[in-house]
Amino acid sequence: MIIAEHLVLLALDPEAGSLAPRVRREALERGVRACLLCDLAISRRIGRRGRGIARLDDLPDYHPLLESAARSLPAREVSLVEALAGVGSALGSVLPRLIDSLLARDVLVRQRRGLLRRRYPVRSMRALHEVHHRLQDLIVAPQPQAPSIALAMVADSCGVLEARTTTEELAGVRARLAELRRAPVAGGPDLSLLYDIAAASARR
Image 1 (tube, rainbow, N blue to C red):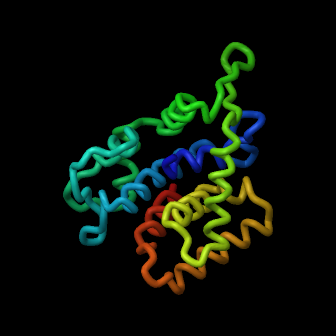
Image 2: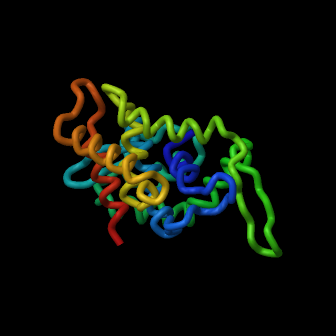
């Protein structure tokens, strides 16, 4: 799964199939756009140019949403705020498309409640465990994987982490992120761009 799909699973109440209490849809929408940029940054399809970022290549991507997000970015320098806005302009609301992707792979199941209300309970517990493993990887691994770091940073910036973890878990994740930022692991990923993407997504 891509990072944005992990964020959606973290944001959902797995049994009710709706966004968990205290998860704001507009903040989550900004978060999933940021996750797309993080995935592109990790795969080096986008990178820094001047004070902003730019698309680095035109190679096709394995996930259609990542491909669409990459095509929305120019090869010239744009700010991160402009890049996030460009993803939104090109893709529209990303959240329904992520839900459709998860439904197509039987990670979620569609349920109708009333005439208009729909719910999307989690069908694949394995996929849900993968999301929580990402957060555990961040806390306990000597060298956490870049997608785990990106997920935690964006989930914190858009309020999902606070809504979906205990006070102790939240403190642990934030402490580890702060530690990694102060002293990056030798040979690990360059976290500065991921931090900047997450910070840009938190702006209103």
